[in-house]
Length: 69
Image (cartoon, rainbow, N blue to C red; front, top):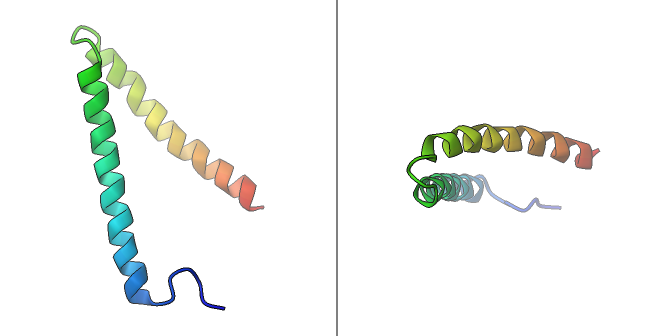
């Protein structure tokens, strides 16, 4: 039974699409957070945003592993 991506070319193409989409999303989210925060607290907001973003990736990986079992 073929996988979701039946050929290597389509897999490579979709990796590029997913990578570009991820970069656009992360850049847009960081821009939104910076523009939405009041200038006097922008640094504090970004100091919270960065660890939450990175911690979310780590927790998401653990959750995926747990669900895959």
